[in-house]
Image (cartoon, rainbow, N blue to C red; front, side, top):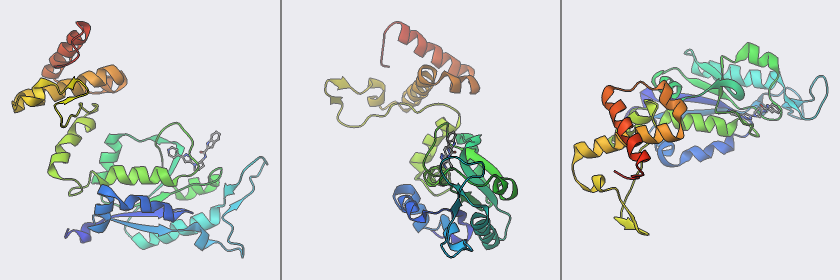
Length: 258
Ligand code: 9WO
């Protein structure tokens, strides 16, 4: 890859940067190696002013747990911002953030500005740091993790695979379905019969138009069955409405496949 000049710059501020080796595999691993993305780390532990290198402290008001102190985190953020010079976005991953969607991931995959992600630990970060130094809060969903690192890796993974050149061409086309707000269609590979179960005969027909139609119909049908909320937000063409109706009729009459 010759695109080192346009590498997507990602900064990470985390107490456990070693966790990010998980990105060194598969698609993200290749993107790192070819310079499609460039990861840089800043550890708040390296920015503490006290001799014990403490990054946490007891919560005002009492109660269990510790809070990430503002100063080491703030200094790490400022160091990252200075490194990128160009305007960057500083993002905190937390359940209090705006829910992430494929659409928003696609938006950030297209925006070239460096992203700086903050990983919280303990009970969270000092609220004043949120006000002063965080541009956005993003959430993966309504559940609590033990730290923000895994959430950041999820976001980096989702963005990276949308960068031009991250995937083979075959994979790229597949992405369309989900960004449209539909679930994936079912996949099959050899053998043709596995434990008495047949591969849908359309997929064996060699008729590419019929196959594309079957896949779209399955994507519509599965979305209708499993995630009707997604379908409500999608805009369907009249052909797609027809395909879905056909699927619904087939379901009623008990025909499972094709
Ligand atoms: C703990 C908690 C306990 C009771 C009620 C609400 C609560 N929220 C939290 C909490 O947010 N803890 C965080 C743990 C502190 C900072 C890092 N942690 C984190 C990030 N957990 N989960 C995320 C996360 C990030 C993005 N998307 C989903 C979850």
